[in-house]
Image (cartoon, rainbow, N blue to C red):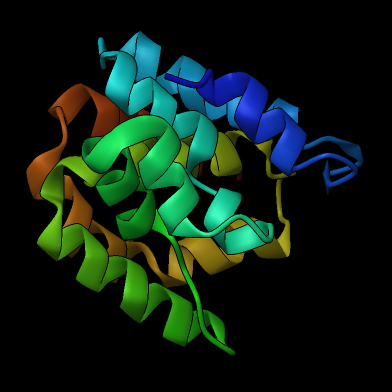
Length: 157
């Protein structure tokens, strides 16, 4: 089986996250998952969660390299569509179909909020989406993990 970290870093080669190599964001997502005891398949999905959305790698390749479980989680976290609303509808539908992927999506959101500068448009967007995000994600994640997101949102004021 392929190494998810190496695969993701290669797939995102040349992409930046806030001026840093994209690996910075992916590593932050995986560290959040580790902080809450999520195992290898969750961590693999954490490394790979943006690959289908942000690169030319198709989901079929994720499935071939990493198996059905990881591919299902990646698919559930993948936002495709012309608008953010369309992308969120797809993600929320995916999370309903694969609730275990909620932990990966929450780790992604935590990493994004913790990296967002105070007063940024990113933080404001996450605040606008908070109720819809909570309705889908919160029932499927550890309470302490959800509290970390809430603390990050408060801490960015």
